[in-house]
Length: 122
Image 1 (cartoon, rainbow, N blue to C red):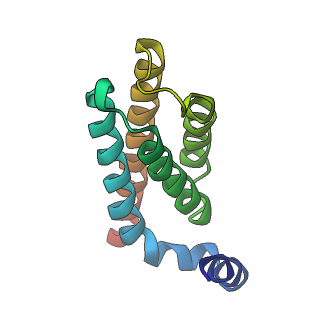
Image 2: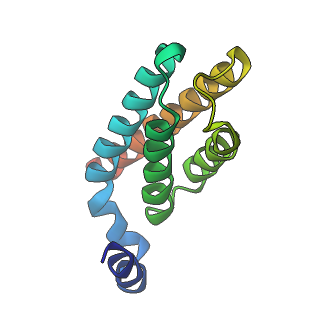
Image 3: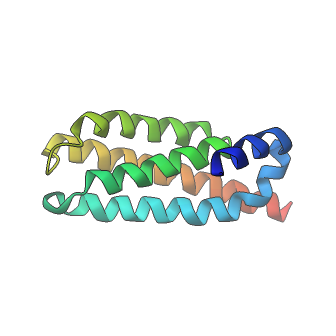
């Protein structure tokens, strides 16, 4: 069902139409980031599956909203954790790399949010 929505959305929506969805996108995107930060804050309790779901959802919505840099950061994280999903806890290097990528994603969201505010004020 949702796949059909995305095809229809992609066909009917223009980049200008996306601007109206930025508030919803930003709210859910920041929620995904917060969940991932919480998961990374305690590596012994890391749930790779939940981390993957949140990053994958963020990647999909970023791609739909045409935020290419954020989409690429999410792809990078997915490529890092996909082969590690069978591990119980991430090693220190993987954890640090994921934390760094989460910071980059959060910075991108801050940038998108500031552009959104500027457009609303114009």
